[in-house]
Amino acid sequence: MLCLQQVTNEIMKLYCSSDRRERPFIVAIDGLGGAGKTTFVKELVSMLENACTIHVLHIDDYIVESEKRYNTGYEEWYEYYYLQWDIAYIKYCFSKIHKDYQKLTLPFYNRETNTIINKQRVFPPNSILLIEGVFLQRHEWEQFYDYTVFLECSLEIRKERVLKRDSYIGDELAIMKKYKQRYWMAEQYYLEKESPLQKANIIWQSANISDY
Image (cartoon, rainbow, N blue to C red; front, side):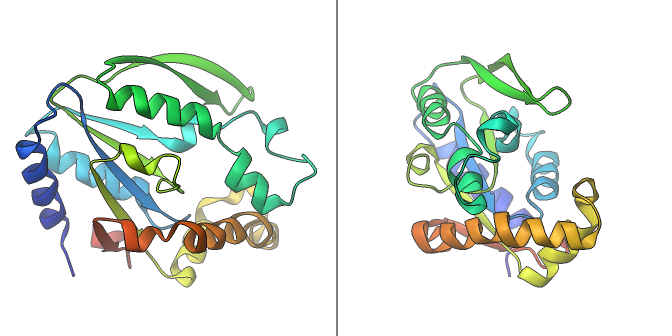
C-alpha cells in the first residue's frame, strides 16, 4: 500500500518535470462521499507547502442554489449528479486555468443564505492546484488534470463517517434515507459511467482517517 510520502514524492516529481510552468500543475483528489478527501488534502498540503505554492479548490464550494438541485422533478440521484453543479461553467473555469488564466471569478456558494457570491481567485504559475471533490473524473472535466488520485474506501467505513459528519441532515434514519436515495445511487452511476478507479493515476486505500 502506498504511503502519503510516496504520493507526495510522485506529485513533486511530475511537478518539477512539467514543461507547463506558465500555469499551475493541476491535481485532482477524487473519491466518493466519506472517503476522507478533505483530510487527505490537508495532509497533502502540509507535506507540499514548503516545496512550492499550493492552492486548493473544494468542488462543493461551487454548487448551485438549492432550488436548482432539489424538487426539480428529476430523481434525487440525477439531481445530485447532474444538477448539483453548473457542469458547463466549471468546465469553462477549469479550461481557463489550464490555459494560463491566473485570475478567475468563481461562483462561491453561501450555504447560510443559499446564494452565489462571485469571488476572485488567483492561480499563479509554477504552483500546484489541488482540486478536491466527488465526481471529478466525469468526462466533462477530466482532461484538465495533470494527475489524479482516487481515494478508495469501503461503503461500510464511509457510512460510519457520514453518520458522524452529516448530523445536519437529521437523525441516523434521515441520513441513511438521503444517502440511499440521492448520494449512493449517483455514486454508483458515476462508477459505472466513468470508471474513475481505472482512469486515476493512483488509487489511495483510505481505510482509516488515522492512516493519513
